[in-house]
Length: 200
Image (cartoon, one colour):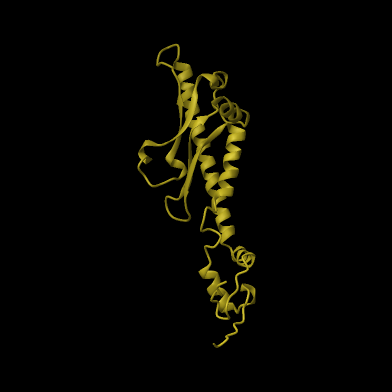
């Protein structure tokens, strides 16, 4: 039996050409499985703690028309959300703040996007559920509710854009050359002189 000795290199020890080959081959090493989880966890922690919102989020990306992120929720602490937005300076009508326990906010997909593959911020909206009637007694409050729906929808879409921006930034960081090299070294991958991985 002939014994063959192969010289092994870390990615940093390879020639520029071999290193380029490795970086291209392992470009997705950090973004192959559930890479977005830390961003989603931080996003939902903020929404639940500060605004009383739990739900689901989706995104598509990056850099194509229609890419974006969105979230929906049927379990909104309406009282907390409305008071928090009011405190933050959003133009929530005072009647909605006073009667926030008598209405319920949900964040839903816009009907036009129910069967649509897009998940950007404009695919969701706030819906305020209430028992108000269109009569003289309830009309002022109803107008305030409709105004609050628009304001909260705008806020929801701001948060969707914020989520997308965080995801995009994190994806770019994970895809950077330095991050790929760090991961290859962390996994102790070794290569032949031409950049072919040596099986272990």
